[in-house]
Length: 409
Ligand code: EZ4
Ligand code: CO
Image (cartoon, rainbow, N blue to C red):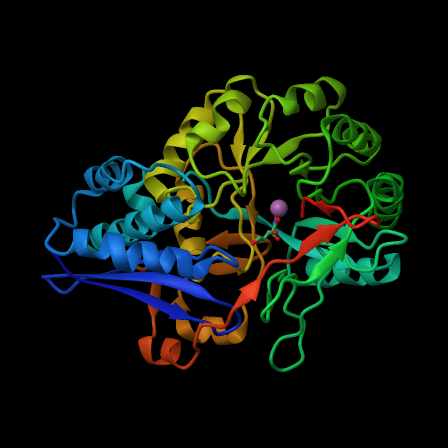
């Protein structure tokens, strides 16, 4: 089973996606996601210029060996570009192996540990009435767990509020990257945020009752002591998790947060190897691992991170925004179905054009995702559809404080 062809397919139906498409001499095709939001072409160049030439002629069945070869032979290790490129290769090889075995990938990973994956969606609103409508809409779509983000008094624009429309004017949920030549500037005020968020959760609990699992994302903006205060002030509202309270490059910061609050913590959507988690898993400073398969070296590496986490009762909470392509999402659905320590899966619906480019077998019913029973990942790439949509430059926004200082976004 030799790799005879390797193409990096860039398409931009509702947003940019980078897909590695491998073909073997016996005619099997495997797909891997290498989409890195706002820096897509860096992964394209890494793959096309430096990885594709190494793949031609390799044995497609040697997944672990290929992973170790790409990781160690580059000498320059880790980082989001490298790890997304390695993930694209890794997932494409798992897709090929599962197609060759004529099994859905989750069967090769040990078989199903559950009937489906609890998913959470993104409800948001500038003010409470829009937020409540958005929560109700999500419940009507079947979501059984919901992330809550709102506007903050005094701030013009803020992370997490659905703002972009689809090409036909519908809601394209929360997609922070905006097409154009410059990143959008948002504003931030930590004191106003810390005062406001508990009042939002108080109102949501009052309206929707105690049962509904609620989540919230602070998106890396707080210092450890501010994060500790937020966690403490949200305790009465029983969050499923509080996400990315601090930037967390400094893993030790979580010690202080943890000492002060019993609100469960989720971290890691921008981490890319097990080394980023070393201290916070060993010291049990988090409850959920937020890594996506796409940004953490593929199924091979993320499975190792999650197996390590399982020894500490830490569960998965894989990142699933729209910038994880249908290929990346499928890979993590198979992984989540197979592992014992699955926690929850973030699930934001892709746009209709995206679903034309990527033909998928997964289902979402009664709040649970399932990757389906098609051999491999269960995703086919329609090359003719993909070719209709050229790459379009798009940047994630950034933040400035009132005095003009750049702040974490
Ligand atoms: O900002 O996916 O929890 N989800 C998030 C996302 C990220 C984007 C970055 O590409 O934090 O909305
Ligand atoms: Co997040």
